[in-house]
Length: 310
Ligand code: PMV
Image (cartoon, rainbow, N blue to C red; front, side):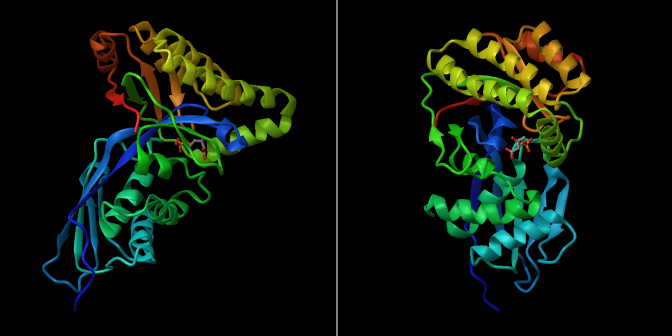
């Protein structure tokens, strides 16, 4: 039995939302960045070409045959992406390596679906084809995602994103260092989005301006970054965290972790993504050592990342 071949290796970016989460659901802009090496996939022919494809990502505790009707959303989504790209359904073991925590708002599912599409379509495939295939999987994971995660997973760099419009790559004069702090608290994007929606419906005249302020922080943040004004950008992160708190998606623990980061020298700190748990981001001072030590001493596992323009 002969099956189409996969390319030997593919990768995709993770993502972090710097500013504008939740507001982006209401048509306002968001600023998001790609995390290098969100995932690296390698493809290996199975000894028996008639065996179902198998996906193994030890960092995410995944080790699954890829069946279309499987209970596991990763198996269904991965199978759907490969099938959408007319890739093989049998005969391959796909091995994944990632430094990102899964299900923490760092774009792990979009990174996986983009890299799977690239395993079939190859490194020179059209971006639109990769995005379309990624969205087939993302809909299985998330219902009706905005598409931001797939765009970032495929492109990397720094993007200003408005739902339904082509993303705008933002040039950066200097790489931007950030610390990602996983809170270890599970959260559901759908629950947090629904929470904001309910508060917005109860108090539209208050939540509308709050979302406008979050959007204004996006454009002020872009200006600060382009002017290399890191204290200004850090302050905007702090403001955005307070505004997100007002929408109802922060928690006492996320507030405590932001305060902890600031107490150890962070120039700004905020929740990133849906909130309710998941991750925070902190803008480190010139020497991040004390901040990293302080976070580690509190039992956290901070991730130092560098964002460069695409
Ligand atoms: O799933 P997360 O944590 O990356 O959050 C998604 C960002 C939201 O703005 C809250 C929702 C959305 O669809 O953009």
